[in-house]
Amino acid sequence: MMEIFKTLADYFQYDFVVYAFVVGILIALCAALLGVTLVLKRFSFIGDGLSHVAFGAMAVAAITNLTNQMVIAMPVTVLSAILLLRSGQNAKIKGDAQVAMLSVGALAIGYLLMNVFPTSSNVSADVCTTLFGSYSILTLSSVDMWICVVLSIVVVAIFILFYNKIFAVTFDENFAKATGTPSEAYNLLIAIVIAVVIVLAMNLVGSLLISALIIFPALSAMRVFKNFKAVTICSAIISVVCAALGIVISILLGTPVGSTIVAVDIVAFGGFFIAGAVIKR
Image 1 (cartoon, helix red, strand yellow):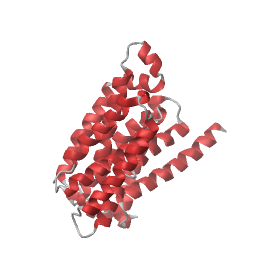
Image 2 (image 1 turned 135 degrees about the horizontal axis):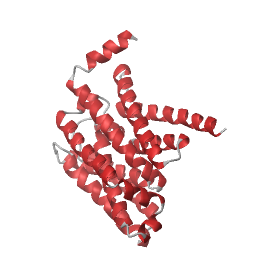
Image 3 (image 1 turned 30 degrees about the horizontal axis):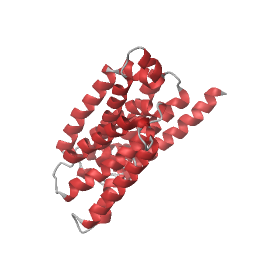
Image 4 (image 1 turned 180 degrees about the horizontal axis):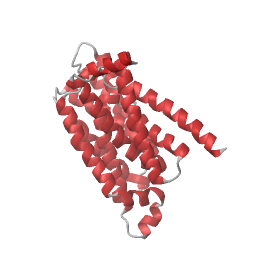
């Protein structure tokens, strides 16, 4: 055990390890806060669809040799979130079909562009990195960390400031409308914020694993708690702990960061599922 702590202490002397740890914790926190609302509103599929849109945007940014890929990925993903919610149920193509079309289309076009206009000799590795996150934590820079810190503060501040409105829209949208709450505006706000979180999480867990950060902590907390505030707090704690454990395990075993974090989330869900069953009995 002492050897493990010594190894971790040695690793955390390097800045890039600290960057990865900070980014992982912040992304996990933001994803968990919004995950409860998305799961309760059955908007989980939007997070999955937007993650694929972010992949397509990242591919465009890669072939144009942009240093900061968020310049393209962030506005494209946010715009997609707005279009998905704006069209809503009044569109000729309904919501779930829209997300499916957008998801598959963005994924296919992104992969096509990365093959037609390769930026390196190993296209498969580039695609794998974008889909499943960076294999090595060396890829995160101080600029990435500070961008994540600033945007995470904005996300948490929005959630705290509009907590009551988000709560009302989550549980009874019709009642919220009747009391004068602009539910469409708050749904749009939720979609935009989750789009920001998705783009932030791309480097850490990749586009295919982002939904896991959003869904698993919320579902785990719901196995034990039934109160919205309790579920939100528990979800945030689970997500942060799992992210920290995932990064530590990744450092010690040399496994991919994103996949390891998601694996820890799955184990946590199993534990809370059993705990919930025991409590009910």
